[in-house]
Length: 445
Image (cartoon, rainbow, N blue to C red):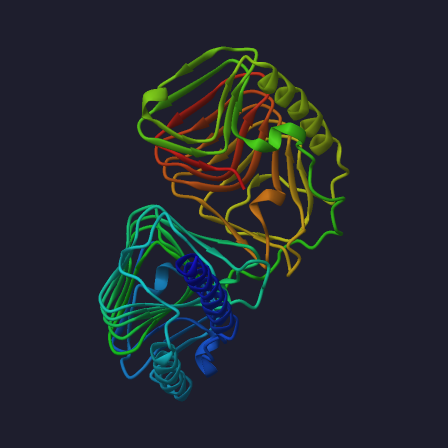
């Protein structure tokens, strides 16, 4: 009896300590403040030695160089800002960058991490690695509904991201509150996307097709670019009135992939959410699928989900548009609303959806014909935008280009084709035809 009472007391004490420890960790993370960039805040790209660009690069924000003077490849830059080369403004911004870098490096870490952080989800806090960090695949930063939440990643050595990797912001996370303090150099892989401000002690290399929703700030060395998009992605091009709210998917909300005719997969594909097929029965390539959910083939659950998809599709298609658009949406920023095209829509490069601080804001894109995204294109969510509130109502078929990334639920009347390496932070729901996949990642929000 004495031993039982002692064990009970020890157990109660352990629970109490665990609760206190968890509360302290939460308090530490909640107290994490943003890193003040000073005058460096207005710069999208800054270097100390040289800035070199190859190919068409778009920069939103100022470009600074100090004490160096050589900026190569300006002729292929599309700049929405001012170039400061070896002037007073650039010198002050470099000085403020040193202060910001030291602030970020000096924060007390909430957790120690190492290696590749792709495939993981982080909540707000300060994360520290004594050596290098890498990102392969998708890294998710979840602000848990707090648009002021801050994420700081400290590393003693390099930051290296893999080709076509992505940083997904969710739960109201803002790229302006994400900081990468890099102890040496940063290299971003081809057609990858990174959110946040890179503050590197040495150089920053943005390889072909990289998108940075933030800043590339190098303290002591060069910044090298090649056909990139860099800058704060927050300037709206269209501001319609608020939409009538999200589209209710009914039982279809549980599904990440759904088709009517067939589902075909080639290569390693990971699906988080249920998989449904009705009235068809043929699912090909299951052996290379990693499903985190249930497969429903020609059963009552799949039939009901298809019926609910018809209702949701008709709801999305029937909304009154706030604005009419056409062609390619890449390179633009949209605020919440219903956008309509009588024909096809495309996405090349980066499309930004800015919820303006409202995590319940809905975006509905109606199109009479196809949705086609270019290879390595991205949909960037900012201002608290959520993938669960983005809907693509496609009047025929949707085809997503190789290594592209799309946020939101595709509601296609006909087929959906996800080519090699596509990532969907949402759903691929086909009403009347097939879903075809090839080495993809589909994650139901």
